Length: 257
Ligand SMILES: O=C(O)[C@@H](O)C(=O)CO
Ligand SMILES: [Mg+2]
Image (cartoon, rainbow, N blue to C red):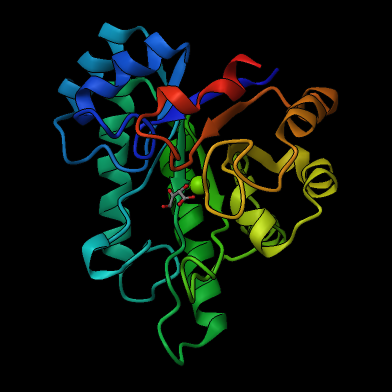
């Protein structure tokens, strides 16, 4: 079985954030990840992870005004300074948490924006992020998000994420392969993972439809997890789903299968 991490932005949300680290450890996770740790002081997050004995394996760069509907800054012309300040802030947290993977969310394309300008902005920001992170031993990832859930998201397919990684031409820049988003937009999961494997730095999953735990939708996770082993994927696989039951624990049968 792959090495699983619990995404604390979606799992164990029945508890306050800083208590989720211990809950994940008790449930059997050796590692955790989250989307944004920035609402809590880095030293408090580090203390929670250390106290629970779990590794923090990934989080996102700051992604703009989330409450206002922004879903990332990477592709947005004119927001480069804000993106770069976010990289610096993420590096502060990564140092405190010992985290070596940071994910870049490209953002939602502004209406009538020039796609070439968005692409150039994203590539420039990815290069900046890698140039800032790589000397610290930190990988940068770019994640494709489905446009049914996030209409207009600029990087909507793993094939596009792969193309951007190639165009940026930087070491330590990888795809964050989210199985849920890939199933919604592209399907053909096993073959696309196999084809992109050398460029995948992290995998996340949820079932489809509904973004719930394995077994709540159409994806054959027992087979797919075994395929990740057969393919030799040695990275982390992040459980990033909405538990269907009253609490996270009741939906962890997949972890114990
Ligand atoms: O798939 C997702 O939604 C997350 O990985 C994320 O960070 C963007 O919300
Ligand atoms: Mg994801």
